[in-house]
Length: 106
Length: 121
Image 1 (tube, rainbow over the protein chains, first blue to last red):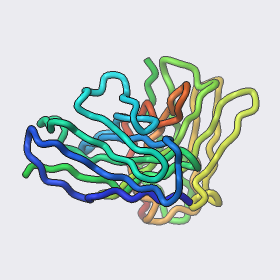
Image 2: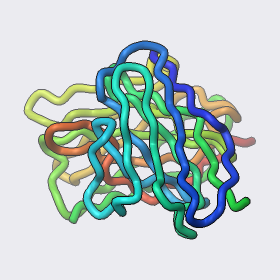
Image 3: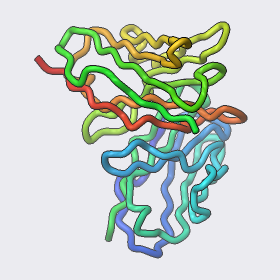
């Protein structure tokens, strides 16, 4: 099984901050990685697919990078609507999620 | 646009079978991949399995759940379903049905709102 490890688990930040979340795969997954945003009581929302491709309608302040085993999600300037939990997910073999990173208000 | 709606009992007794249905509107279930994903209270996301709907439909399941899971489709009703046997309290979760992206990638694209299932006597 491919394990996905996100860091940090919790991140405290302020509006306007640049935020980076890291996701590491236990083996190479190429660029078969997605990022999701989830708010309390809501279904997750796809932000990034194929490691770096922005889903339609997602603000350009979100970006993804990486390949192989190391990936990052960056929010260039954190907005009030961005306080949420973020998950990475691999789809190279079966499907596995990271444990999540909660971005809260500093 | 495609929309998904989960339905099924909100309470299931331990050792019994959990059964949920996802009704798809705004598009056919044919020629697409459809997953079930769950989230225990306060926990992360767990993929359960998917079905590819076609003339020769097939399923892939999470190895950790494979012995208890069955995903089926009903193309006449544009639905797909989840069956999870021998449930325990650990199966208490919000269950989501999801459509994968349709071309060039396979991320989880369109999500239902989720349905809470509690396993308790």
